[in-house]
Image 1: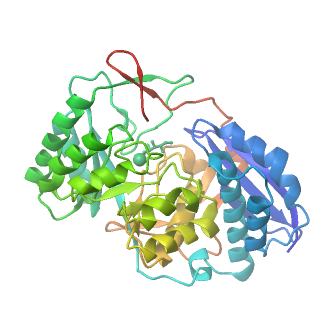
Image 2: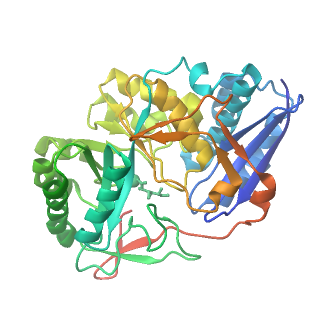
Image 3: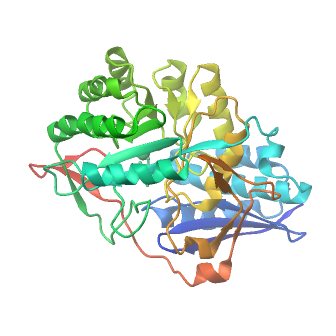
Length: 404
Ligand code: CS2
Ligand code: MG
């Protein structure tokens, strides 16, 4: 089971995806997602120039050792680029192990601890009425949990809303150069409780309600938001403040019982240790593809379990179907699973990635195909060459830069 080659595939079927393909001497292939939104080519270089040459000749079955070799063996550790590259290697090796043993990855991880993975969908609207129509569509499909976002009145644009005509998803990185979004916290703090009230008034409380703040608030503003949303019994508010100021969560916690989620921008267990260890959050949102793969994310989830924190992995459309499948395999097995984000993938991503996960009545299942259950069609991938794209930036009304 020696590794014969490791190749990087870059494709843009609707948006950019980077995929690592590892092939063994016996011709078994495994794939891992190496997409880092808006910084894709930095991971391509890290893999091609610094990681792939180290893999050839190693035993593909020694997943733990290869992980340690790439992490501990590097002097410059952690960070999104490194940990996304390691994640891609790790997932590709789990995929190979599954194919060689004829088992789906979830069985190699100890087997299913639940019948399905509860997911949340993304409802949004340019107005509250449009948002309500969108929420109705999700509930009709059987979703048990819905994230809601709507355009903040008074601002020219708001991040996180699906663009007209694209269906139930949005594309975070939408331009060849970063576009500007406007931000004004008072408008938002005034609007958010009205939005949640409208949703609960129309649809009641028999489903989970989530909301993403995208790191826009100060600790006290976040505390105010949490308090104002308490009547609407949120499943969580996500990324209320910039994630690197971890003491901020203590301030928020002291003022509100609204559950807190954070972690989509974290890359290692060390980024999560303080928040989890001090029980300052309720849900950890680290993802397979940005946090060192299944091998490392499993450790984070175990640490969280020890401290009563549940999982809620990032699952935006800029994480490819390969990492979404990997997330489902892990979600199915961990005792402290909370929820899984599912934004879906825009066409024509389905031409490139053939998936075997399924949706039924609000739950998803990764399927029982050997490995991760996702294949990449390289001919289709070649039809969609890389396109430079950036996430937008935020400016306050006076033109100054605001947090992401
Ligand atoms: C969002 C994403 O899915 C989420 O929770 O925060 O839109 C996120 O901003 C993008 O995935 C960034 O690449
Ligand atoms: Mg988010």
